[in-house]
Image 1 (tube, rainbow, N blue to C red):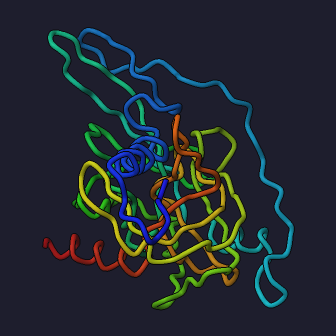
Image 2: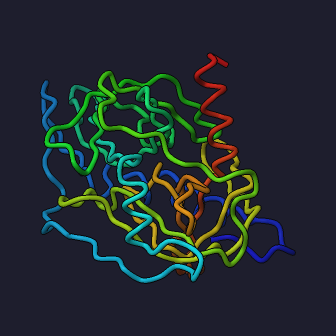
Length: 277
């Protein structure tokens, strides 16, 4: 959890931030969406959680001039995908297999998808799915920047995928109403939507792979599996990519503190990766 602005981040805070960024949101390597089960010479994985399908009913008004939550969902549903991965690790003579889950934002109608690098880190296969899809679509990793925690995927069949509407520069201000959309806990029955506000801007956290700066802080609930999903404003515009959540420890208490990479930064990183840089 971040310290007050006047005090430099402690080693404990940096460690906590790393856990939030790389474990809590991604459902990788043993988080709720994919416990690893050791198998000799196999790629199967045991399920970690059984959950009843959950439907989202959201009709509250975000702002008098903006869209309702239900309208935001309708405007973005063709631009958000769940991301599922298969991950393998070698532990001596054993092959450890598991599943990971995250979320992706459709960049364009050609099938390019933006997500977090930690969502697809170590993946041997990647599939994505729109809520309306009856079967998953195979995706390939175009490139990833682990330091910036940004990755770009590509699906061969972009049918039905619609590039998201992105906010202009400085599209997120403290107090703005926002919703977070993502594959929370990899629950069946569609994506999860939560509502909140922009709590702060310009936040910085440190992770095991680098430092992330210029982050948007929100109190919209962000859970495992939300990584790579959009933070959307009341106009239906994507203002950030959900990436991390602060969690409590024995000595630090954290509540409703999530972080999103500014969409300007994320898109610039995606363009750089697509250009081969």
